[in-house]
Length: 236
Image 1 (tube, rainbow, N blue to C red):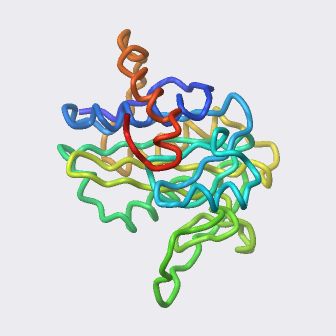
Image 2 (image 1 turned 90 degrees about the horizontal axis):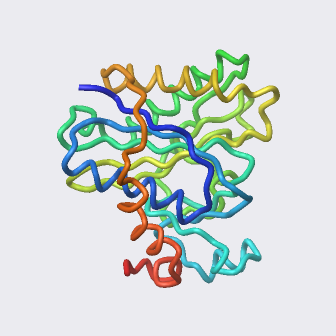
Protein backbone atom coordinates (compact mmCIF):
# COMPACT_ATOMS: atom_id res chain seq x y z
CA UNK A 1 0.00 0.00 0.00
CA UNK A 2 1.12 3.58 -0.62
CA UNK A 3 0.53 7.13 0.60
CA UNK A 4 -0.79 8.83 -2.54
CA UNK A 5 0.15 12.46 -3.18
CA UNK A 6 -1.61 14.44 -5.92
CA UNK A 7 -0.34 17.41 -7.98
CA UNK A 8 -0.84 20.92 -6.60
CA UNK A 9 -3.78 22.95 -7.90
CA UNK A 10 -4.61 26.65 -7.67
CA UNK A 11 -8.36 27.22 -7.91
CA UNK A 12 -11.34 29.05 -6.42
CA UNK A 13 -13.06 28.16 -3.16
CA UNK A 14 -15.82 25.85 -4.47
CA UNK A 15 -13.31 23.97 -6.62
CA UNK A 16 -10.90 23.60 -3.70
CA UNK A 17 -13.63 22.27 -1.41
CA UNK A 18 -14.96 19.98 -4.14
CA UNK A 19 -11.54 18.44 -4.75
CA UNK A 20 -11.08 17.70 -1.05
CA UNK A 21 -14.58 16.20 -0.94
CA UNK A 22 -13.89 14.11 -4.04
CA UNK A 23 -10.88 12.59 -2.29
CA UNK A 24 -12.98 12.02 0.83
CA UNK A 25 -15.75 10.29 -1.16
CA UNK A 26 -13.25 8.07 -2.97
CA UNK A 27 -11.94 6.87 0.39
CA UNK A 28 -15.00 4.65 0.83
CA UNK A 29 -13.75 2.34 -1.92
CA UNK A 30 -9.98 2.93 -1.73
CA UNK A 31 -8.00 2.05 1.39
CA UNK A 32 -4.98 4.24 0.65
CA UNK A 33 -4.22 7.48 2.55
CA UNK A 34 -4.22 10.52 0.25
CA UNK A 35 -2.69 13.99 0.36
CA UNK A 36 -2.71 17.14 -1.70
CA UNK A 37 -1.44 20.70 -1.28
CA UNK A 38 -3.15 23.60 -2.99
CA UNK A 39 -3.43 27.36 -3.25
CA UNK A 40 -6.20 29.86 -3.94
CA UNK A 41 -6.65 31.64 -7.26
CA UNK A 42 -7.55 34.83 -5.36
CA UNK A 43 -7.94 35.93 -1.76
CA UNK A 44 -11.00 34.28 -0.21
CA UNK A 45 -12.46 33.58 3.22
CA UNK A 46 -13.61 30.14 4.33
CA UNK A 47 -15.60 29.33 7.44
CA UNK A 48 -16.41 26.18 9.38
CA UNK A 49 -19.28 23.77 8.84
CA UNK A 50 -20.92 24.67 12.15
CA UNK A 51 -20.62 28.46 12.00
CA UNK A 52 -23.61 30.73 11.38
CA UNK A 53 -23.23 32.48 8.04
CA UNK A 54 -24.95 35.67 9.26
CA UNK A 55 -22.34 36.06 11.99
CA UNK A 56 -19.50 35.36 9.54
CA UNK A 57 -20.87 38.03 7.19
CA UNK A 58 -20.97 40.53 10.05
CA UNK A 59 -17.46 39.77 11.29
CA UNK A 60 -15.75 39.64 7.89
CA UNK A 61 -17.78 42.28 6.06
CA UNK A 62 -18.06 39.87 3.13
CA UNK A 63 -21.27 38.75 1.43
CA UNK A 64 -22.27 35.10 1.71
CA UNK A 65 -21.95 34.89 -2.09
CA UNK A 66 -18.22 35.50 -1.64
CA UNK A 67 -17.67 33.22 1.34
CA UNK A 68 -16.75 29.53 1.28
CA UNK A 69 -18.22 27.07 3.78
CA UNK A 70 -15.93 24.14 4.47
CA UNK A 71 -17.21 20.59 5.05
CA UNK A 72 -14.98 20.47 8.14
CA UNK A 73 -15.30 22.42 11.39
CA UNK A 74 -13.16 25.20 12.81
CA UNK A 75 -13.36 28.94 12.41
CA UNK A 76 -12.84 31.70 9.87
CA UNK A 77 -9.70 31.43 7.72
CA UNK A 78 -8.42 34.06 5.29
CA UNK A 79 -6.80 32.47 2.26
CA UNK A 80 -4.45 33.81 -0.37
CA UNK A 81 -1.32 34.17 1.75
CA UNK A 82 -1.34 30.67 3.18
CA UNK A 83 -0.28 27.12 2.28
CA UNK A 84 -3.26 24.79 2.30
CA UNK A 85 -3.44 21.00 2.35
CA UNK A 86 -5.87 18.10 2.52
CA UNK A 87 -5.26 14.71 4.12
CA UNK A 88 -7.66 11.77 3.85
CA UNK A 89 -7.33 8.63 5.99
CA UNK A 90 -9.74 5.83 4.95
CA UNK A 91 -11.33 3.35 7.34
CA UNK A 92 -9.52 0.49 5.62
CA UNK A 93 -6.14 1.84 6.75
CA UNK A 94 -4.58 1.64 10.20
CA UNK A 95 -4.13 5.40 10.46
CA UNK A 96 -7.91 5.80 10.60
CA UNK A 97 -7.79 4.55 14.22
CA UNK A 98 -5.59 7.44 15.43
CA UNK A 99 -7.71 9.48 17.90
CA UNK A 100 -8.61 12.94 16.62
CA UNK A 101 -6.56 14.95 19.15
CA UNK A 102 -3.55 12.69 18.69
CA UNK A 103 -3.86 13.01 14.91
CA UNK A 104 -4.08 16.80 15.22
CA UNK A 105 -0.92 16.80 17.34
CA UNK A 106 0.99 14.44 15.04
CA UNK A 107 0.15 16.53 11.96
CA UNK A 108 1.31 19.72 13.62
CA UNK A 109 4.46 18.03 14.85
CA UNK A 110 5.11 17.07 11.22
CA UNK A 111 4.58 20.67 10.13
CA UNK A 112 6.87 21.87 12.90
CA UNK A 113 9.60 19.46 11.80
CA UNK A 114 9.32 20.63 8.19
CA UNK A 115 9.46 24.28 9.23
CA UNK A 116 12.43 23.58 11.50
CA UNK A 117 14.33 22.49 8.39
CA UNK A 118 13.85 26.07 7.17
CA UNK A 119 15.05 27.53 10.47
CA UNK A 120 11.53 28.34 11.67
CA UNK A 121 11.23 27.23 15.32
CA UNK A 122 7.74 26.44 16.61
CA UNK A 123 5.90 25.14 19.66
CA UNK A 124 2.55 23.44 20.16
CA UNK A 125 -0.22 25.35 21.91
CA UNK A 126 -0.90 23.65 25.28
CA UNK A 127 -4.32 22.14 25.79
CA UNK A 128 -6.46 24.17 28.23
CA UNK A 129 -7.12 22.80 31.70
CA UNK A 130 -10.84 22.67 30.87
CA UNK A 131 -12.41 22.32 27.44
CA UNK A 132 -14.17 25.44 26.21
CA UNK A 133 -17.61 25.14 24.68
CA UNK A 134 -18.87 26.75 21.52
CA UNK A 135 -17.79 27.13 17.91
CA UNK A 136 -14.47 28.90 17.17
CA UNK A 137 -14.55 32.41 15.73
CA UNK A 138 -11.46 33.48 13.78
CA UNK A 139 -9.17 30.48 13.43
CA UNK A 140 -5.86 32.34 13.70
CA UNK A 141 -6.99 34.76 16.42
CA UNK A 142 -8.25 31.99 18.69
CA UNK A 143 -5.68 29.18 18.93
CA UNK A 144 -6.71 25.88 20.47
CA UNK A 145 -4.76 23.04 22.02
CA UNK A 146 -2.10 21.49 19.76
CA UNK A 147 -2.20 24.31 17.21
CA UNK A 148 1.26 25.16 15.90
CA UNK A 149 2.57 28.46 17.27
CA UNK A 150 5.62 30.65 16.80
CA UNK A 151 8.49 29.89 19.20
CA UNK A 152 7.35 32.59 21.64
CA UNK A 153 3.79 31.26 21.58
CA UNK A 154 2.32 34.57 20.43
CA UNK A 155 1.44 33.83 16.78
CA UNK A 156 -0.53 30.89 15.44
CA UNK A 157 1.20 29.49 12.37
CA UNK A 158 -0.86 26.40 11.52
CA UNK A 159 -4.29 25.01 12.26
CA UNK A 160 -6.64 22.40 10.84
CA UNK A 161 -10.21 21.14 10.91
CA UNK A 162 -11.51 17.59 10.60
CA UNK A 163 -14.52 15.62 9.55
CA UNK A 164 -14.75 12.01 10.70
CA UNK A 165 -17.23 9.53 9.24
CA UNK A 166 -17.45 5.75 9.22
CA UNK A 167 -15.67 5.76 5.86
CA UNK A 168 -12.77 8.16 6.42
CA UNK A 169 -11.19 11.14 8.17
CA UNK A 170 -10.89 14.37 6.21
CA UNK A 171 -8.33 16.93 7.41
CA UNK A 172 -8.21 20.43 5.91
CA UNK A 173 -5.32 22.46 7.22
CA UNK A 174 -3.40 25.64 6.50
CA UNK A 175 -0.19 27.48 7.35
CA UNK A 176 -0.16 31.26 7.62
CA UNK A 177 2.85 32.29 5.54
CA UNK A 178 2.83 35.96 6.46
CA UNK A 179 5.08 35.63 9.55
CA UNK A 180 7.45 33.19 7.80
CA UNK A 181 10.36 34.75 5.92
CA UNK A 182 11.98 33.04 2.91
CA UNK A 183 9.53 30.14 2.83
CA UNK A 184 10.56 27.48 0.30
CA UNK A 185 7.32 25.70 -0.70
CA UNK A 186 8.96 22.86 -2.65
CA UNK A 187 11.35 21.96 0.14
CA UNK A 188 8.63 22.34 2.74
CA UNK A 189 6.20 20.07 0.88
CA UNK A 190 8.88 17.40 0.44
CA UNK A 191 9.71 17.46 4.16
CA UNK A 192 6.06 17.56 5.25
CA UNK A 193 5.05 14.67 2.97
CA UNK A 194 7.95 12.62 4.28
CA UNK A 195 6.89 13.26 7.89
CA UNK A 196 3.29 12.34 7.06
CA UNK A 197 4.40 9.17 5.32
CA UNK A 198 6.22 8.20 8.51
CA UNK A 199 3.03 8.91 10.46
CA UNK A 200 0.85 6.68 8.29
CA UNK A 201 3.68 4.14 7.88
CA UNK A 202 3.45 4.09 4.08
CA UNK A 203 5.82 5.15 1.31
CA UNK A 204 4.76 8.35 -0.45
CA UNK A 205 3.84 7.86 -4.11
CA UNK A 206 3.19 10.78 -6.45
CA UNK A 207 0.20 10.15 -8.74
CA UNK A 208 -1.62 12.16 -11.41
CA UNK A 209 -5.25 13.23 -11.29
CA UNK A 210 -7.29 10.60 -13.17
CA UNK A 211 -8.87 11.39 -16.53
CA UNK A 212 -12.39 11.36 -15.06
CA UNK A 213 -11.45 13.62 -12.14
CA UNK A 214 -13.04 16.84 -13.41
CA UNK A 215 -16.27 15.19 -14.56
CA UNK A 216 -16.64 13.37 -11.23
CA UNK A 217 -15.84 16.55 -9.31
CA UNK A 218 -18.27 18.84 -11.16
CA UNK A 219 -21.37 17.97 -9.08
CA UNK A 220 -19.43 18.77 -5.90
CA UNK A 221 -18.29 22.12 -7.32
CA UNK A 222 -21.95 23.04 -7.93
CA UNK A 223 -22.86 22.03 -4.39
CA UNK A 224 -20.12 24.01 -2.68
CA UNK A 225 -20.86 27.04 -4.87
CA UNK A 226 -24.59 27.00 -4.08
CA UNK A 227 -26.27 29.30 -1.57
CA UNK A 228 -28.06 26.24 -0.17
CA UNK A 229 -24.69 24.94 1.00
CA UNK A 230 -23.15 28.25 2.03
CA UNK A 231 -26.16 29.29 4.08
CA UNK A 232 -27.85 26.10 5.25
CA UNK A 233 -25.32 23.30 4.68
CA UNK A 234 -27.76 21.64 2.30
CA UNK A 235 -26.42 19.41 -0.44
CA UNK A 236 -28.16 19.94 -3.77
